[in-house]
Length: 96
Image (cartoon, rainbow, N blue to C red):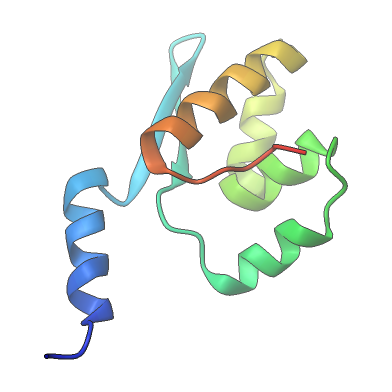
């Protein structure tokens, strides 16, 4: 039986999902990664369960996060974004 090819599996995931998962707020588009590097996963684990700002800043990058902060986004908006993100990518973030 051949060995599981991680690179081939990753390529299939990225082909199906793309490199980013995009969402729109007030006509401006923002992106979250469809794959989270292990280093980022460790940083995510260090965040408190209710640290939505830290979560978004880490996933989006500081510049994109600051652009998002210019919009009036509610906690419910962020929860809806993260729920859709998790459903589409299979990544469970912001749960706790």
